[in-house]
Length: 279
Image (cartoon, rainbow, N blue to C red; front, side, top):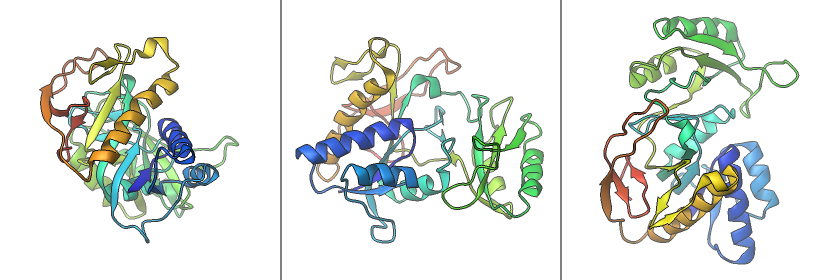
């Protein structure tokens, strides 16, 4: 099984658990493809066998977090700076499972008011910053060059800069926006991950229903709770991806943080919202 290893706080806990399971013999025949240098270093330190897209251009499954999720299961990713490699690995995966807490749910992408990253070449970066801001005047966009802790431009694993876009209103047409951003010379990649997620696993203050088991996050450290939720589902996916498809049911999720009602979606017996392909 070739597994895409995501980047970020949620993904880091998943990688830790995968390493522990490999060490204990609970997981075998796993090869990981990391989406950043820091994930590569973490996975290598845990003894997880690693590879690349060059050697494994086709992955069975990728697991990662997200910064925003809209009702169409479209995503904003890349606030951790790894958007290019994340998109390459996750686009090459048969299944892409996203794990978030319910604070990441938005009615429209850009709706959180937090950064939507765009990776650009260093050459004439300000030229592209101005052009990106002009693209989204109607959304009240403000474009800022991302800086590191020392106040210098943040440099990605690919030696590029990141321009963060901040919106006062959600992006009206994320598909059109993605095409317009990608068409700008000097833009390497953007943080709109559209029509890519197979499933989104949502943890919230009301708990998470998985085959009748409720994990109540209010009583657990959030990071630990996400691991408890993610790993059993991941193992189930790993076990069954190459065998039978999951049965499906429909559900509607009511949220109070700007998402009044999520669309009815196909859900596996694990309570996973499915989009790109049936699990």
